[in-house]
Length: 289
Image (cartoon, rainbow, N blue to C red):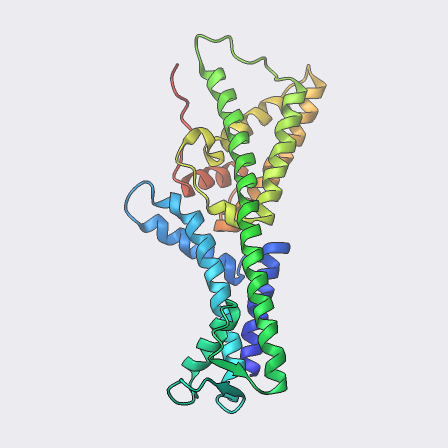
């Protein structure tokens, strides 16, 4: 029973840390996500990375269910079969781990076949608790999934805006943006980048969602955003642009530090951002007009 309680505690801690806190780099869920990403990197075809995010989500949720199911099975196992009532039609009294796992999974998924039911008082309390955890896991997983899409939308919108600034600056038929850009532009880019950085910390699974279209891929344009911030910081005429460019540089440094925590990238900010683009198999060429 002690081993089962430990497995349940590990699963619940990982669920809580992933959904309501900041999961550590070497937590079970983060390890599963990173392993899935590495496997997709090794698969042939350019679109393999597109499946990394969705598959990571499914694998993590499945791992939680498996840990809870096995943990509760280890709790029930010492009580098999004396602590349970068996339906008359069952073939023999289940005493093995498979029977305990079967009862645990039926209880966790709230299917309630009724062929096996707890008889001991402790088990009669434990089984409903497992059902509540199973229902809570389902609800939390759906809520987690629904929270991912707004995060991805914010990231893609920021990437597209940076891409447009890059294309306008490289278009020979366009006079290009003013230099420096209005301070309000730098301020807006800073606030949105900070939001994306916080999103990545709160929902680390979003790091592993790959965008095939470079227009919406933030890894492909982060180095250009760094160029914009450095150009603003060099301004001596416009103090507003100089100030907001400095804020943007600090936000980019924080973003790079967060990214480095995912793939253990070393080096300066530009090196980390370049590795970020390589890790997502994207580059940032500007399309000719």
